[in-house]
Every structure is written in C-alpha cells, then in structure tokens.
Amino acid sequence: MLIVALGPVSGAHFNPVVTLAMRLRGALTSRETAAYIAVQVIAAIVGVALAHGMFDQALLQPGTHAREGTGQWLSEGIATFGLLLTILLGIAHRPAAVPALVAAYILAAYWFTGSTSFANPAVTFARSLTQSFAGIRPRAIPDVRFEVAAECPLSTRADIEGTLKANAEMTGTPMMELDVNGEAPGLAGKACEAVLLQQYWHKGVLVEPANVIHMRFSGVWHRLYFDYGIVFWRISDAPPEPGSDTDYEWEYPLEDLGAAAEVIGIPLDHYSMKPVVGGSTVELCFETGKRIIFENVDDHTTYRVV
Image (tube, rainbow, N blue to C red; front, side, top):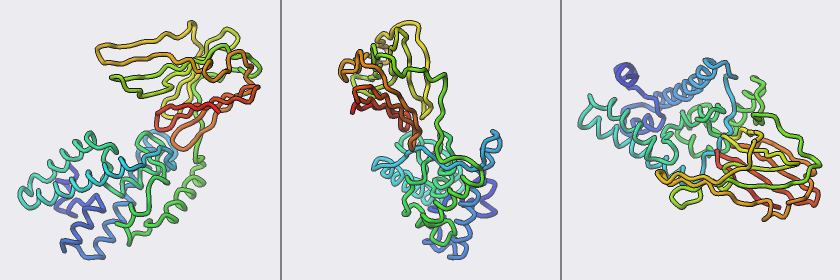
C-alpha cells in the first residue's frame, strides 16, 4: 500500500540497498542518495519509538537478541539479491505489478530464509533499538552493513554505539535486565535429591537438551525453564514423566543429570541468575565445588557441568 501511495511522490524508497542500486543505474544523484538514506534510517528509528510508545515502553531500547553467524549472513545475501532482482525485473517488464511483487517476495523470504529476511540496513539498525522479539543486539551488526550509508551521519560503529549508550542513559533502560517469572526458591543448604532434564527431540533429532529442568530438594520438586531469556520457576506436585507425540514425532525423554554430575546428596551452596546477551543463565553451585550452568540464548537452552 505504501509503495503504491508514495511511488509517485518519491519512488517509494524505503531501503538503502535499493536506493544505492538506483544510484548505480543513474536514476539518482549522489546528493539525493545521501538524503534518501538519511531519511530511511531516521524514519526507521522513529518507527521503533512509535511502536514502543503505543505499548507504554521506553522509546528506544538497545537490543539483546543474538542474530549472527554464517547462516544469517547467507540468508541476508540471498534475500537482498532476490529483492533487488524482483524490483529491477519488475520495473523492466511489469512496472504496475512492482508493489505486489515486492510484498509477495518479502512475505515469502520471511519463511525461506534463516534470518527472517531483514534485507534492509535501515530496518536492521532500527531493530538494534528494541528488546522485543524482533530485536537484534548491536554487536551482531558489522560495519559492512552500514557501508551503504557512507554519507549518512549514523554510518560508523562508533556513532552506532554512542547512540545506543546515549539512548540507554536518556531512557534509563539498562543494557540488560533479568526477568524472573515466579518465586525463586530458597535452596541454599538443602541436599540435592534429583536433577532431571526433560529434553525435546523431533524426528529423532535432539532440538533442546534442557527444555525443562526438574530438581528435587527436601522432597519438593522445582521446575526451571526459560522463554526467550525469561527465567521461570514453578513448584510441581508430582515427579516428571517422559512424554511423546507419535503424530508429530515429538519426544520428551528424561536425562538424569544429577547422577551424571555426581551431585545427588550434595547440599547446594547457592545458585545465581543473571542476564547475558540474548538470554539468561542460572548457575547451581554445590558445596563440593561442582557447578551446573544452564544457559538460554535465543530461546535455546544448553547446560554444562564444571
């Protein structure tokens, strides 16, 4: 809809990559390109602030979700190439259909790419200013992502980090916060009677090694699990049982981590919870010095015994 409405006014330039492609084709001057990219970045930031404002949240929040790696960048390369190809071929052969083509491509790319298809440097930068599910931590955005905005004031890593720090100070939003749902139990000094991991398997492949952690201290079962970095504590009335769903090929077997880690009968000295980039951790420290660390990053929970 916006492409149809704003196309006659400005060419509906929402993406710095598309704007640069038009500059290379001679459709824009360097001055126009710089102006377009500056407005694109500013408008993306304003959009994030408005979205937060509608839900009474801090207007700008430095992102914490880790979205990086070879798969992410390959996905972005394919998504961006496909978008440019769709636009350029559409302009050449079916100009009137370009709005529908772009909308259909973006919708499809959301599903067929591992990165959910940002395909837009301005949007990527804006997503580094939200702690919602759509957010992305600033360190996951390399400088190359902003080379397309070389003439834009927010085009260097120093500017980006400075802006994020200023936003955090201005809004009073800490860089990372720990969110705990439920009452954290008092377990210090109590002997461990069981630590069972309920794993998640799908079609014979281990998806989540520690989907839910079941612990028993002084005869009481405690259930620990995570949801996008939020730490959940619950008390269970009964011991856990393995589960499965043959129709969907899901399995939830139990692993006896307490026995494997040799902590059964050992009193817990203390435990700690803290936020990390992209999630949170819970660390159990036993009186023998043995530690079990559960880490949830990007809603994937792993563990290690040290």
